[in-house]
Length: 367
Image (cartoon, rainbow, N blue to C red; front, top):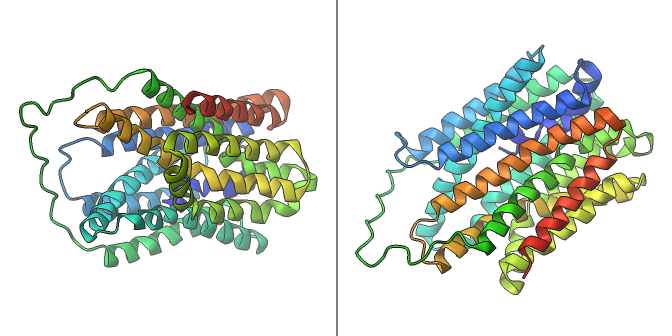
């Protein structure tokens, strides 16, 4: 999923050079992917889907691989939009159903602490795709070949997953609530609304840099030497980030950890446009990688915990609303950045707007 969902970022500079895509078109393509992710996440959370989690997981992983390969055959903006929408939808299903398989197995084994290892896969996929694209780009591969290679890598991992992930029996249906176990109060109070709003602002705040950081490196002469490494740094920093932020959450509470991570991310994304020193640029990208997966997990953990504190029997509705808020922010960010770049010729203003959104998110949740 780390490849299928995020490889667009390191390939984008090659596409801008080799196609008629403009920066605002590129933002639309990224937004289509995030729209697909939003629709897929909400569809994957629906009750009563036929089939097994393993079947959905492998089908979605195959669809992610095929949609990546097909991007290399794309010739029109409409085709790119459709394929990235499919890729986003598939990546959401991969995350939902792989998590269901892995987290249930860890729960049964009494090792829920290993969940951070599972989620580190996204960061590892980002790091792998950065190495793959940098190596092939150095060898002179064009943008089509980069998509073919990314899809082929996902197909290889699909084969490994099909071999290694065992068939599982359907999970038993949850028991019906007994009289008196119904929710005591509505969980939709001011703290939850602030958390939902902050989660949407976070989606907007991280995604602009996550989409355009490689293109920014290529378009800035002083930063061009860092292009092959910047996305690798994001992935390497993301891999252990959930484990780290889980520890921070235990120490200071999930809301304060969420706020602290948002402030760190705001500083990081600002560094990518406020300095043309490669070291500071890469440091900013590292702070993005070190926080965005952690904030994603912290927000959902706090929403689930809030539902429990309010006596809400089924947190699925709250998690779906959180996902929707996050997805809307993700969709708005690349489009906003692309349009503003078309007006100003720079990613500085949209990136600083993203940093401001992250600071507002931190203020909304902190207590």
